[in-house]
Image (cartoon, rainbow, N blue to C red; front, side, top):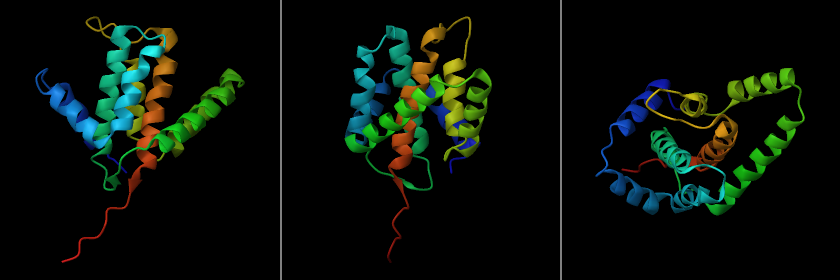
Length: 169
């Protein structure tokens, strides 16, 4: 499980990444996680504005960097694993859409309490909900959609973790 400290340190390190370092990180993602990179690039079909697409892209990169810090080996996310995560989250959305407000809050609390990476998911929620005078953030009506897309990525990353192989001397 990834610690709160790891999430915080990785988030801070990524926030200090300069513009000239970004292409190198993107090239690294292309080599290590091409399906994820393609997923992040193809958000243009959704109703996000340019700023929101860039923010989701950035947050997806941060989540990838966080997941690389796991005690388990992060393997390449396959198209099959990404579709599996998409299907599960679409099903979750359909269920949540039919719940009363009380049941919805209860279900989300249970989801957060039982989530396999309990420090990473709240980072996503916090990043999406963050508002500041200098940063427009997400429009209210698209925060949920942004959350679902980033949770799909996180679920696919979690599904792509496996025990590191033992080193033989």
